[in-house]
Length: 197
Image 1 (tube, rainbow, N blue to C red):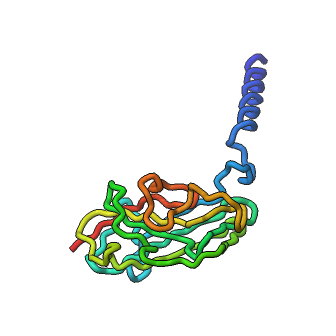
Image 2 (cartoon, helix red, strand yellow; image 1 turned 120 degrees about the horizontal axis):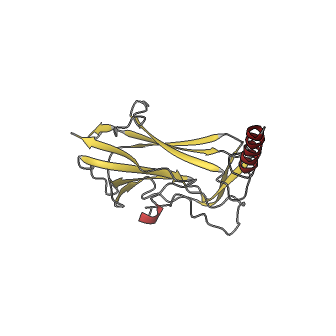
Image 3 (tube, rainbow, N blue to C red; image 1 turned 60 degrees about the horizontal axis):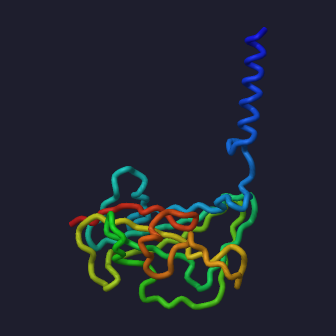
């Protein structure tokens, strides 16, 4: 009988602990919960995904590489992302293991000012693909070697157009700084690849 009482008390204590922990299945609407997740993929010039393995993909010098960044609304409600220019995403290539940006997709572009937005339903994703010709910001062919790519969305805020809160989790417009080269809800990981002869 004592064993049965101990088992019941132990099971009750375990259920109480699980009920007060984050192990319970609740909606993702808490104010501090990440509402979005951002990923990046690398494809060859034919649209074939080449970044799914553990070995970094390799590309022959001068061939086109496609970068696709994806943001997904992981909440249970509609969410709107606001941008303070027409530029909604940016990609940056760095030398592997450094913060030395050799190319970013908005180099030399002048986005139009004015708020734009993307509204995503629960579970919906938004993709942006950019085809890159392996040239640096000075239009020189990158040398053979190891590189990493970072992509993300340049979200101004989620509160609405004109609200005064820039978002530190966003991808930078222009070249990202070293402090901006870590994943966040709007930035991807740094995904490695190599350029070969």
